[in-house]
Amino acid sequence: MFLQQVTTVEQALRAAEALRAQVMTAMRDGTAHDLIPMTGQTAGLIHDIAPTADLVRRLTEG
Image (tube, rainbow, N blue to C red; front, side, top):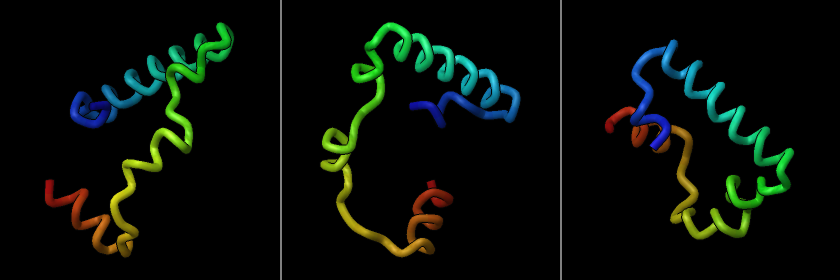
C-alpha cells in the first residue's frame, strides 16, 4: 500500500512523482483505465458513511 511504503516527506515526494509518471505514461498509452480504478470498481469498498471524527480516529489509531 502506498502509505505503508512512505515514512518521510522526502519519500512521499519521490513516491508521488513516480506515481505521477506512471499515470501520465498510462494516459499517453491509452491504458489509464487499467491503472486507475473507476467509480464502479471502488463503490464496493464503501461499507458505511461515517462522521468525520470517526474517520480521523480510524486513521490515527492504526
